[in-house]
Length: 365
Image (cartoon, rainbow, N blue to C red; front, side, top):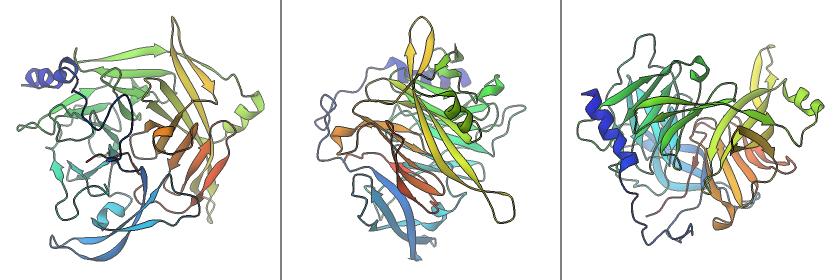
């Protein structure tokens, strides 16, 4: 049975890519697409017919001016999604919840989705592999923009060795559970590479990229690569070594791959314990696939901008197509948000708790 499911999963690599529709041509953006927005909160309103507490969704369009207020929509969303444990991740505008070991994909936080009939796709309980756990999740990624697509594969990375894959559109939904032997990937975040048609991960040190080959059904390690800090002096690197750091693997629409190192200060709380993390700096590296794989620091990614969140799958778009600042990183954490000019590391943003720290990428009708 598992070999049959693996064969079905591999069709993603073997099928021809879908033909371009009228809304997309040569990378252009059409008016049927929505703007990129950041989820701010939900203002409690009432109880719905499903006997759940709901509130009005509040968003902020990222291409709005800094002086513009957040937008309160008429769209109602479950208030339970606005708690720290309400979601485990997001990809392509779909958020994932995890209750009683059941993963559910929901479009409730997508401003373009139906208000009266939100889509909720439940997946079966994944089997827990030996010496693994399936209660704590690192993040979620999808291979296409909707779990209703025939070719869509959902990946859930659990803390520890286990990576689980599932096709939501299949009538008989089953998980393919993979054990990753290298402990360097136990806390890694998974992302889907459109270029390679594989699920990829960066190890905890940031010097190895591993991926699950959907066609050959095996885990591969790209091997180690070296970092070149061309534009940083030793004193800057020494200062950053005192910060909390996360690494994010991002693939651009141009096919380029970047590693973003996100540095934060951990503020001290009133009782002497660590408090809320505060953004300190981004460092961006472009991966070069030559005879020797290298990650070279850069302060110029051209007409691109990158979107990072603490729980969502990162993504990148061409800035000129969406009226955004090129060469910027837009980010949202649990306690702060903003945009950063990669060239000079200038930050514009704000502070405050983000119960659902996600960006909703462009959505088409």
